[in-house]
Length: 68
Image 1 (spheres, one colour):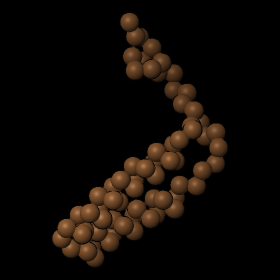
Image 2: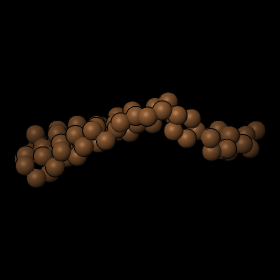
Image 3: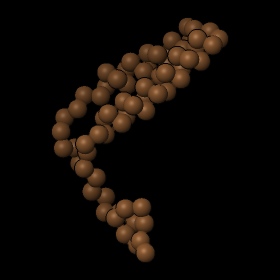
Image 4: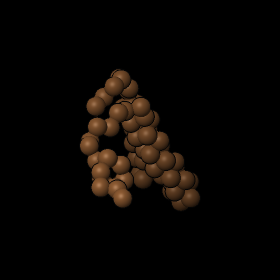
């Protein structure tokens, strides 16, 4: 459930632009480095987008409510 408003689309847009540059414009090692940075950007933007959200899925932790 969303508990607060958070704009995450600019981060995803920036990483998409980096990925396009790395895939189609740059070449060699520089392209690999840019694609790795874009990969990390997607991960960190997703973490930023989900930070502070309350999870109410009823799973009860790692054991799914059936922990010993």
